[in-house]
Image (cartoon, rainbow, N blue to C red; front, side, top):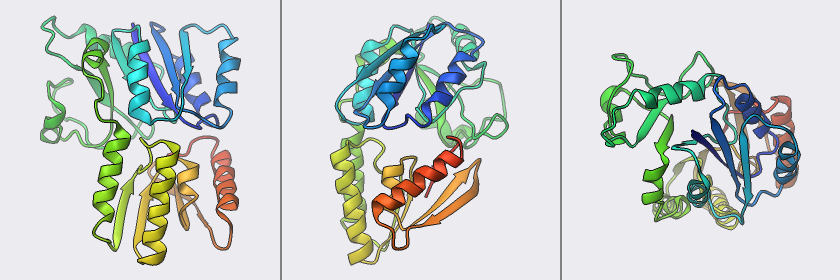
Length: 282
């Protein structure tokens, strides 16, 4: 069995797309484990409603205080009953044969126990992949550190064997790593900061502190901050936002004289118009 694991934080507006893609899977030999990392929106209400329905697969929903993505992953690993642990973010969705292919790939492995897991391409759509893909054989045996050798750039869909993850939990959280990386980026008072999901692994307090530091760099030191994020709250600290859909600029909004709260509401309005299909906002 496969454990589909989803860490989530304030994604009630989009997670139903993932749920519907799970319902459409051709192979239902999986469970869905969701760790809600302290959401303040309607996430808890949403799961209460779907847990009352008759689902063709098991759903485990756990809510915890906000502590970052990697803490949520450690919790999910302990809850998992599947042999494979497949992390699928709350703003992603699966093609209908994703679980079927995952199981086929694992059945093709030998019994040497040398495998950490299996990985496949992710896509902006069913026709357009994220990053590079291997043009040779259908499968390759490679470590994560060897990806560039095979043109495997960009984010990939990864499923690791649960027993391995239970032996090697995250010792330093993603939030701790992210805070260190952010401090290194800001300590030299740079003129340009490129921030890719800078708050993705932070708790709400740490995220706010980091964004306030970005504001200081921008307003007091005239630094330019270019930030990629999926989170409306994080984006509300920006002056200008470009919404990206399927790799193309879809919309643009400017803060102007709006308060951050007013700008946040505008961001939510655009997300609603996109029907939950928002990929990235800068």
